[in-house]
Length: 114
Image (cartoon, rainbow, N blue to C red):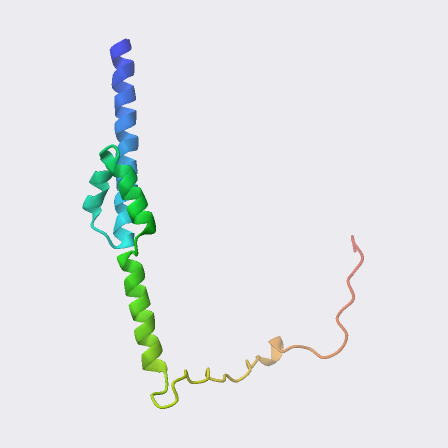
């Protein structure tokens, strides 16, 4: 009975470890780093240094986002004026006659139970 319990605990531990590694790979990939960095999380003391490095590093995804924002801002700005053009003006919504807002007082609520 003792060997079965140890085997079951090892399988549960392996399953949760696989889920943790999969989640780590997903997070590191979304941050823009290579998924192989997750392996450093398995090495004692190196994993602490890695966590602080990734926490305070300038992620490649954020760098690309800043570059894209800068590019979009400079493309939209007026070259001689140096500012963004005004937002486009939209016409007010047109309602179908049966859904148009009604003028006059709102209908009175009916008493409960009638």
